[in-house]
Length: 149
Image 1 (cartoon, one colour):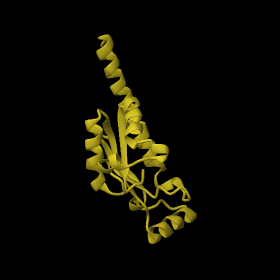
Image 2 (image 1 turned 45 degrees about the vertical axis):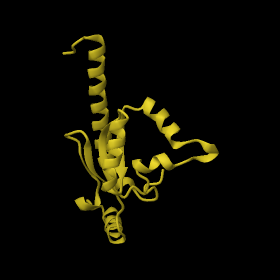
Image 3 (image 1 turned 90 degrees about the horizontal axis):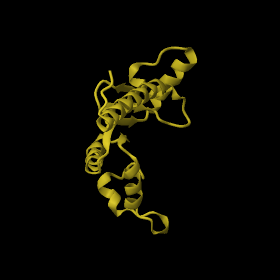
Image 4 (image 1 turned 90 degrees about the vertical axis):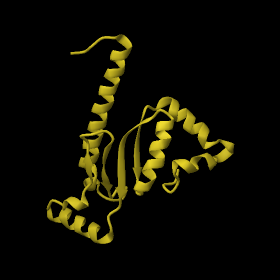
């Protein structure tokens, strides 16, 4: 799906060979319990959250995607060459103390060094793993009636 498409627009999409997007989404929904929203436009978060909620999928993270401008990239490149720590506004930042996790993932460009997002991505993925394990343990406790200590 193109980034300009929102949850409200997916019903109108059609894939090759007549396969409807809603058929693919239905198949994904059967397998998913959690979602991560990543968009350069925070206004698109709400339609996706509503879509997930309507389909029983919990949003565990909402991240804004932001590319660095030419001046910021030049500063980052200079920091990397000179071994200096980049300024915080050049790096991704995440908050993982409350679900949904939030933050900004900066410069997610395949042709650029991952220094801008690597640490934030590691922090976010670790927090997501902990959250998913806690939820899973809670579900197992509900099913078996066994309280873990």
